[in-house]
Amino acid sequence: MAEGSFAAGLVGITLDQRYRLDALLGEGGMGAVYRATQLANDRKVAVKLLKPHLTTDQGSLERFAREARATIKVESPHAVKVSDFGITPNGDYYMVLEYLDGRTVQKELDVDGPFEPRRVIHIAKQALHALGAAHAAGIVHRDIKPDNLLLMRVGDDPDYCKVLDFGVAKLLDPGMASITQAGMVFGTPEFMSPEQACGQPLDGRSDLYALAATMFAMLTGRGMYHAGTPIEWLMAHARQPAPHLPDGFSPELDAVLQQCFAKHKEQRPATADAMIALLDQLDAPAAAAPPEIKLQVPTEQPRTVFSQTTFTSAVVVVPPSRKGMWIALGGLVAAAMVVLAIVFATRGKPAKQPVAKPVTAPVDAAVVVAEIDAAPVLDAAPADAAVAVVPTRPHANPAVDQHIAAADQARQAGKWMKQIEEAHAALSLDPKNVKATLLLADGLIRENDIPTACKYLHALGKNPLAQAKAKSAGCIL
Image 1 (spheres, rainbow, N blue to C red):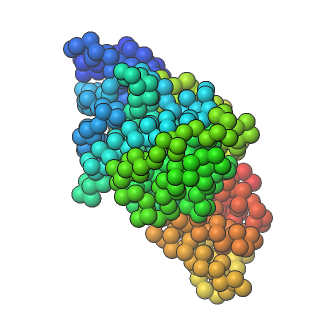
Image 2 (cartoon, rainbow, N blue to C red):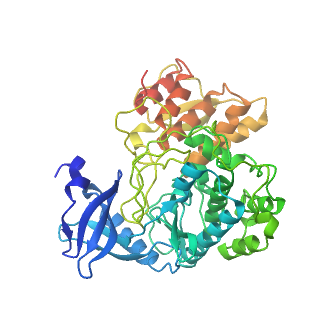
């Protein structure tokens, strides 16, 4: 079967003689999600299915199975339930989840605008219950955002919350093989913790930051920062001070968010239960609607442009496109527990069919910048050069040299986001610094942000190293 017809062509088939795929709910670069029927008891379920080309790496599939078993252990009524996973005789990998009927927080924001504080607190405490259970099972969600909080009516509660999509979840167990690599970044930039934005090790406190960022969006109808590209979002989370809630909101509520927004995770609440305790301490006035804030979506909010897929959570049907500033990044892995690199796409030429790309750039598309003291400036460099040699000369501002050295160390350690951050800091002090520009472009290419990298390389004009790098990266000269 042709790859393009993979998802639609499977509607009507039965997996393992147990699950009939009744309708396609969404599809992305990694797989598809279906409404299905469990034949043994005629029960409606959701099935996530990996695309065939992703089932050839035995190591990845073994990790998928281990992570799936671990995630099933997340015991919370506020986490989507995984009931089964398996492999068909044809080698198809699938995951079975409960099928839920509701609307996401993102959808509510799109339609009705910001939430009242007491509603935000109510939803956040339920999400924290699910996150606490996940963290206790050794799992970091890594993609908490309005699209991954589902609201449904249960009894008298119209805002019963379910946390969706552990599809990029990270296991904390050091003894368990990981599908990730050092320096790789997963998730959605608007809600990433500083350590996640820099590709550093994560624990549950990263999820608490992301939930606080989600709460900020629910309260204000906008993101924490004014950023236009994924890289700008990541830089902002890593470097810019966290914003305060606008005037009219409770200072006590703002103080709780500020604690969760701490750049250093050690300064945040230690656990999900600790964050619940902070929210419980807020009195009634703190949860009241701010009298001077109109609950509507701002009309002039900058929007981030990402390539979008419709591979959404298996438990909710989401339209193929939606308004709002939170557009999901990349395609999610078909299994709810598969570790998936959600890739960044930046503004550039509009493509007829945006395709999610892997986070890491191919090796032959990367130029490693090596520092050689007192080396002469190269008059030419081969187009396929693997190493670009840039001379090092002391800068009038020592901070520039410090940032460049830190960027180069990050490059050698494979921490691409740290490399980008430090190179960007050097350029902010010296916008014409060639080595900082090359280091920044190299980091951007490794994170597959080719269009932005090309802009920096083109800014260097006829510099032979920049031209060689631009050619190897496929920039349009």
